[in-house]
Length: 383
Image (cartoon, rainbow, N blue to C red):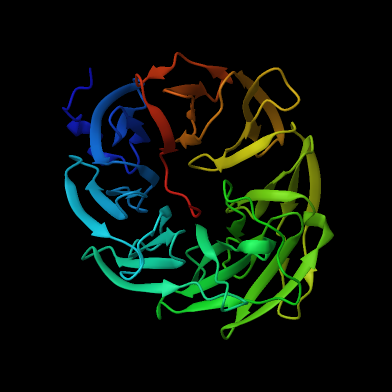
């Protein structure tokens, strides 16, 4: 059913494939490799028992898959999909590591794994596939440290940011210094509201100087000599997740609202003043979930759960025109873009290609009796 021969002519592209992780019968984990030009599965890679997160490096040459039951990170080549290394993750004296997110920072030199169970982030040298250190997510209250679950970074920032969940809704942010591998907790006077760990609440300004936290109300912060300058703004009320584009436009999903928030160059200066060059609300739908951007950032995609509508779907937004179309779908799971031509949305046991030009759903790619977990294609600055 799944040919193992990889099309060698596709090696010249940085991101020639779409990857879908899934669990099959007998609790075996796999990643399906999809040829996006033909919408067929060309390879299936066994990845342990429970693939929990997936990403590539910026070059597209390595594929990283975490397993939240075996507590490992598997590294594969993307030219022939051979296994390079399987790396144990998490603090060695804890039993339940539960890795839930993986992120390769924009230089490609280090990978970060969020171990939700043991409250550590594993930092890995990608050249040697060895663990540099396990950094504890010491929080505002040292007797109640947070559980890391999401990352964001930018090539112009010296930090990788980590979102951490904690009991009693006292969630917070940690910044890991790229050179020193040292964690700095963000301890504002106001405690963050509860993060939704199914969505990444972090995004970073393309210039690298401002990190935006989205969760009911927004924090913007700027590092200055390892110290935070921060402020809040009601303009980010009810936001949940977002993407910051290279043109300095920030698109934010909004909980329980039928619109998206769009900012131009939302930032904070060294005096703690929040600035922006423009703000708009554009029509959307209640039930906004995942938000992604296409390879050249021509399109934004927002998955919509069936809250107001009989069905859910994928909202495709033209960034230049700020116009959008909804592709209605009965089942809406994870989502990824392939280049600027297609998006792929997960269903229960199939992947649904979406043609972006015509905004139409194509025939599904059926994976059989499986449970689809994650879908991934182009490199992104967020886990």
